[in-house]
Image (cartoon, rainbow, N blue to C red; front, side, top):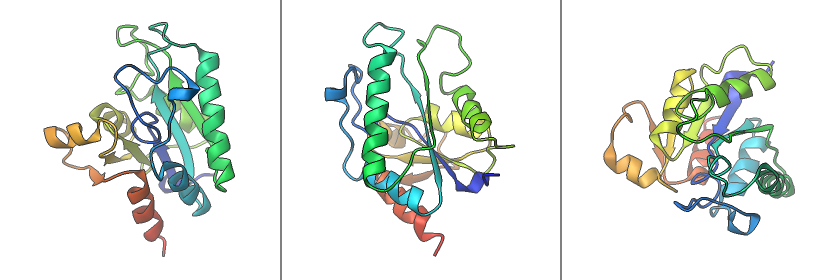
Length: 185
């Protein structure tokens, strides 16, 4: 059974790829952040299981469809695989903020989905890496250790300094991966 300490859950937009207030609506707009793909591969190669949990309300808003989203995620998988890594599972919330679902972060539904899919008893001690307070709140609700990266909306969240008392902060996903992998030495 997967040890929760070996699970790293990543938000997508602003952590793995560039974010946009106008939404990432196509594969052409989906551009990885520098070092992010190699960071995922490094985590995977070091024995960590990597999963992705992402709010994708652009679907509910009619800006793109689930086929387009799947195309982006297949591209992400192929980039990580090409670097020698693996993403175990990607989950997304297609709902809008007013849809009253249980999966939209800051609610923990996406993370519970990851837990069930990976056959884990608990997420206690896993890592939740995000660029917003809602990412961290979703993780904390199920016992994940919160990590804020300053990419995407992370710098703004850091400057607000609200709800970050127990949060580790890193410049980007690559810096976090370097630190976490270095803990195993």
